[in-house]
Image (tube, rainbow, N blue to C red; front, top):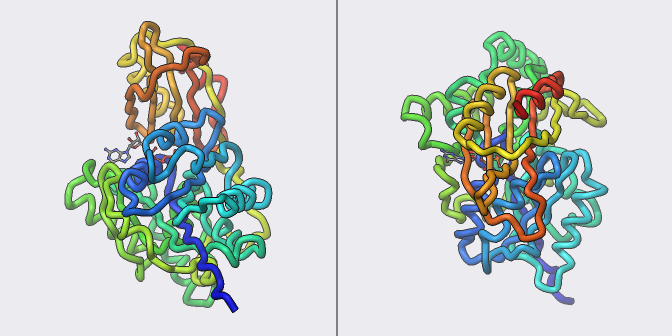
Amino acid sequence: MSAPTPKIPATVITGFLGAGKTTLIRGLVQNPGGRKLALIINEFGDVGVDGAVLKGCGDAACPEDRVIELANGCLCCTVADDFVPALEMLLNRADPPDHIIIETSGLALPKPLVRAFTWPAVRSRVTVDGVVAVVAADAVAEGRFAPDAEALARQKAAMEAGDATVEHETPVQEVFEDQVLCADLILVSKTDLVDEAGLAAVADTVKALRPTAPPLVRVAHGDVDPNVLLGLSAAAEADLDARVSHHDNEEDHDHDDFTSFVAELPSQADPEALVRRLGDVTQRFGILRLKGFIDVPGKPMRLLVQGVGPRIQTSYDRLWGPDEARRSRLVVIGETGLDRAAIEAALAA
Ligand SMILES: Nc1nc2c(ncn2[C@@H]2O[C@H](COP(=O)(O)OP(=O)(O)OP(=O)(O)O)[C@@H](O)[C@H]2O)c(=O)[nH]1
């Protein structure tokens, strides 16, 4: 009898909006430690920023045809329709990958996605090598996910009374916490943006949430040793009960707490003025994430815009194609209640 084919390892990379997941994966693709990688990328809106950042950066380790973009919806909610077929497509290739990297959207809950690996269609062929939560040092140190002390005390009492679920807090905290609580490894990103005291505050926040937290690994600009992230052999799909979630008692969860839309802008002659306006609009309307491409008249390349909270960054990413419409479009993500019309007017001003 022949030995069973070994399962292909898959790593789920989770982390809140703008934490640095795509940057990390770009680092892995450029330095995969000899592995043939494949990527499944999930993000909001159909502007395809993450796919654009990743495609073309990988050469031999991860050619474009091994990058699958699932642009709409949230992977954790479209497991049957989108995720499992994408996974099967990669597994059925004549040259299957050595390792599959899955980037969830910043609002995805990792646990339902890990549960998909128990499905009959995939469980004999692939295993979750590890769930990696990317946690942005600056955002945590600035208190964007800080739990309030009273809620923590209630949670502790509930857990001591045998209630395995945790208290509902703000939507942003809930998502952040679900991601940290599901992780086999926590990657503290953007360490260049904080000092040692900030890093200590990040560690304290994580430990307060999860006293027996897995190792915290620091990273800046996605520069990470692939052997630290890949090869954890966690088999997370066999260990779901140990991963506490805010949504454990729900049949289905929804994403009613958040909203996103694509805003179409006119061409922008002055990128610096645009950055100032985007910073202002972000603050004024409480936007969590902004990203997309902008046409700057006279420039042959398109301008990539990345906004995470108050930080707006721009860079020229590639030439516009000869037949490509030079559209300026930004994905806008925030908590439900964002005033779309007012934001669009302010962006277009
Ligand atoms: N200074 C600094 N900026 C970083 C670092 N890592 C990522 N960024 C920037 O943060 C922004 C968001 O990074 P991404 O890698 O796109 O984050 P993400 O988690 O994939 O974002 P979503 O998919 O939208 O949730 C970009 O402008 C990155 O250049 C880092 O280590 N240091």
